[in-house]
Length: 197
Image 1 (cartoon, one colour):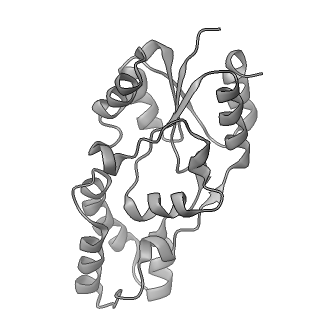
Image 2: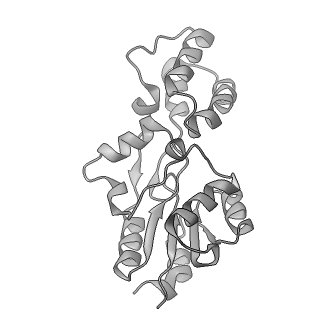
């Protein structure tokens, strides 16, 4: 069998978690929609690695009169649950000789949290691609091209698994095969059947 490249998103696929903004708003009794809109303004530069999360914290302190000096909210309210089914799928793909890497929109606090877990759910991959280190985030088409070119694969020999429809559409637009994971494990197994034993 010809060996393929498989790129897996992390949040919503390998680990499942709620937005830390939800827990933060509950603790400080803040309006979720308003904080969420502020969060959106900071999100892309943080995902692209051009803005530190501390800048977001300082904005929250000024806008909402809260003291976050001892509350790193992106860690405090980040409670990822490992999708053990997905770890098994990735291990099976690798056992069949395929190259399996991550392709995640993330920023340092969450990425470091996952790396520090014991065992780390990131340890199952051949290589890790994180947006804040690449200075590229999904759905920028350059994100996908960067990964399959770095790995030495043609887009047609590359597969992208993500939970977000927009990210799937962009992967397909650059020529990759793509599957949207919606927690339907059997559907994913059916899709990957030619590549795993």
